[in-house]
Amino acid sequence: MKLEMGNFYVKEICFGDKTSLKDGLLTVNKEEALAVVKEDEHITEAELYIVSPGDRVRLVPVKEAIEPRYRVGGGPVFPGVTGDLMQAGNGTTYALKDMSVLVVGRHYGGFQDGLIDMSGEGAKYTYYSQLKNLVLVADTDEIFEQKEQQKKNRALRWAGMRLAEYIGTAVKDLTPDEVETFELEPVTKRSKEINELPSVVLVLQPQSQMEEGGL
Image 1: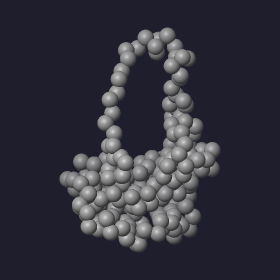
Image 2: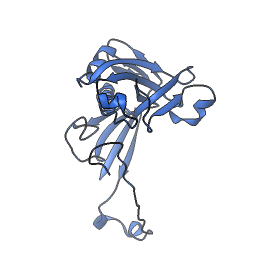
Image 3: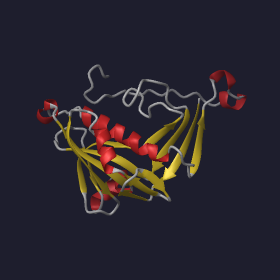
Image 4: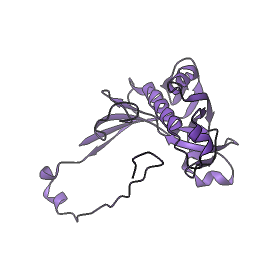
């Protein structure tokens, strides 16, 4: 398997007429972006904000944090969510670095909810205080979300992934600032030096946040 990651570094975010990236400035068409969010009929209200390092802002409850990406050659960035299931980890993918899409809900209470301080003492405890963030603040009509302690946040999280994928299209026709290549040869084709390395076993505990049929 071979994966090429083309990285684009975002220096600033603003709202404007066309979603695009030029000289590190990411411009977002808010109307188009919110239309993508509201493709799910369960989203009852939504607004976008731009939050940068040092802003006197506390973001809570944070439901999801996503790096905007674009899959070159077609196919979803998030297989099974924004498109059909397909193999991931190969081909070429573009990524917008030094920024993220943050999804913030109206209802607090899930154990997995996050808090991000963009300035002050709390900022040192989170990586996302160092990023330029496009923040989606939204609510849904899902009764489960309003009354249960452990929330699924499905509509909000799915909306965040659609939004991140939309933002990723800003770089689809551009040349990356840098390209990282990750390649894993088939076992039968690896060099003698690789095959003589010590074997490692990874035991990974899968976790699913309130998804039916999860582990």
